[in-house]
Image 1 (cartoon, one colour):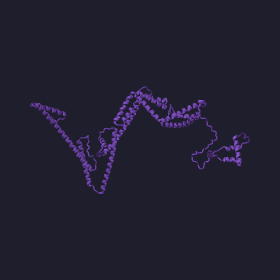
Image 2 (cartoon, rainbow, N blue to C red):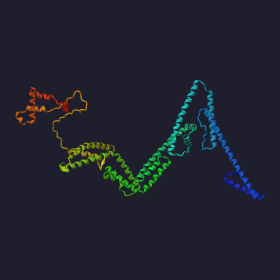
Image 3 (cartoon, rainbow, N blue to C red):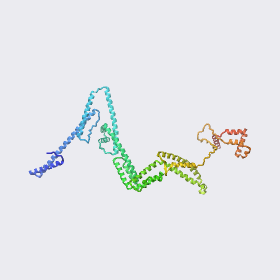
Image 4 (cartoon, helix red, strand yellow):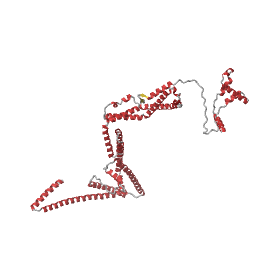
Length: 544
């Protein structure tokens, strides 16, 4: 009889045998009860046979597991004797059969026994001198340090790797990834130590290091993609006037970078792109308004504006919208790059307008002669304050502008244009025009003004010996000129000269000296403002 290869064959054969059994019972003349009883007994026997086979297979499986455990215990025994670390529980590869795992463990047991015997032979031949013992102790200490070092490396690596698992929301399927996850979640210290011993092999530690690098690169790529999508979403939300509460809720609900959250970002971007296609015309119109506003802020000329040909087309397509958005982005960058120059130009233009308005108002000669309510007594003071402010602020802003414009031209390779003209050239022309409008300078030598040095405030510490400040008075010269005048010029002298001459004569008579000695004494003595102020102060105090 050929062997049955499938359940269908067994069912067909069973039906055939049941028909044969029923035919035999018919020949015998058995009753219906006897036929049913015989069939039930047959089915029970079949089921019992199948169960016996299942039980035998289960026993065989358990025997293999017991053998695996025994072999693992043997491996554990020999490795501990050699000072090697191994988990107390056997770790089988779930992707392999029990027979395969058993075969690999048997090979590992043979290798461990061989290594143990080799070491045992070496130990029998070793001497027990002090040097040998010291060498063994040093090796043991080195091994302990290496073990502690690897344990800390495993802890740090597992902690970092697990955080990446959570951050990226990965579904773990790799054996070592599952082992890392199990080690991180394990609360029992003994089991944790056993898992750590498994992970601290060179191969596993190398895997942890490489896995961390791989997932860090994935994290950076995902974060970059999320940032890119976020910028597009914010731009589209603003363009489409999406409810801000919806935007905030979406961002708060998808703060991470898991696969689920990234899918939500992609779905939202697709949804907005569909809405964008439906409102391309509105987008183009809005972009054109923003472009015109930036043109005005950047003082673009008509020729510069005509260079953007997409702004003059009537087509409402995606390509035209992209051209507008690209031009808008370029203008925004240019505006931000030139903002400091534009602010200075605006301020310079404002000052020039104020000057023109001021000059126009001061052309009216009757502005100061109003009567009654039309009279403005503070006008002259305000005009003087305005002149001082302009003389202070205008040169300063011109100087700043010249430096900024020259720097811009050196960096960009072309001058800064305002309404199609170089603004630096305009400043230069205005400066030359102002120089030409100034009246010619009179180079006739004049007598220098006397400069009186005022004493320091009374609150300042005084010097012990006051410094005498020379004040060159022209009195002696005037006196000398009076004495040297001819008689015919006396009538032409002023009253002041006569008074000075009379005072000199009185002083000479009072002192009993000559007029020449009085004049020489006036020349030798100088005016001391500090002493003079002290005398005045004392007189005021005495009066009080």
